[in-house]
Length: 121
Image: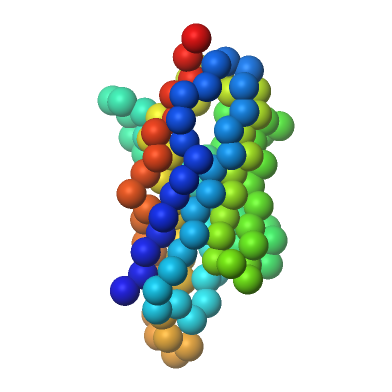
């Protein structure tokens, strides 16, 4: 079994910062890509940022220049540094990993349980 455990969410004022962490554990051979998605009330889940094992990164236009994704491959951990937070960043943030459980097996996608980020005065 594989688990993704997120931490670091909370309440922050506009203009503030938060750092999210997500660690994958369990029966893992290799992780290809990890990323962060978010879902605000009444909206669809959207990609925030993603990073591959080779270091390729992509961001949603709405967070470019404010958020930074990074990864520690040795710890199977992905981070999301969020600066200059805005009220519209308020959402549940989900960690996502695309990985192999066996060397010759298929890739699977796993999700974390989500962590709430609220940006408000």
